[in-house]
Amino acid sequence: MTTDTATARLLLVDDEAALREPLAEYLSRQGFAVRQAQSAAEARNLLRDEKPDLVLLDIMMPGEDGLSLCRHLVEAQDVPVIFLTARGEATDRIVGLEIGADDYVVKPFEPRELVARIRSVLRRAARIAAPVPENEIFAFETWQLDPLKRRLTDAEGASVAISSVEFRLLMAFLEHPRQVLNRDRLLDMVQGREAHLFDRAVDNQVSRLRRKIEVDSRNPQLIQTVWGGGYMLAADVRRMPAPAE
Image (cartoon, rainbow, N blue to C red):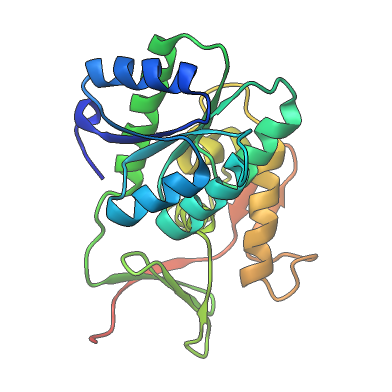
């Protein structure tokens, strides 16, 4: 992750050349290194060569749409995503946030606002990616999480796959055990939304995480709902040296 947001590498994915090309030129003048793709397929090819610091992604494109590509970016590449969408319906924005997008802007938008949002997401992503001690893991109840390897293991040492969004959500709880975290704070910590937050995005992510770590996700004991407040990790967390390889 590039720490200097002004020189960050951006990938702009939009099939509309009349928007994509002038926007890429504008962002380049702001100091960003910008690569362009007119489709999800072209974006995937570019991603094989270089991992960008952030992707600006149109939702409606011929072939694979932006939502599908966003899932790949979030789960496989762990790249921050800002959606560029002409859609006005709130449902599309909620879906984007639920699958892990960090922000969205609705076309037509003010380029200066987009630059501000890009820099905000990059700063937040840099904080999330801040290094943890190399020999430290988090232990809670029967679970262990190795932050460097992003590896979650159960009592038998078996790995349980979690997406990058689930990882960031779990880290938020592990760093604030037995503290009530409301939805706005969780979204800010995990996805970086600053205003007009969608509570359902957090609720769905918490539900997915519960299905991974709870004995009975319908009667959760680890991640508890605090009515009117948010969620709380009801477990003690220990930081332990990671076992030697």
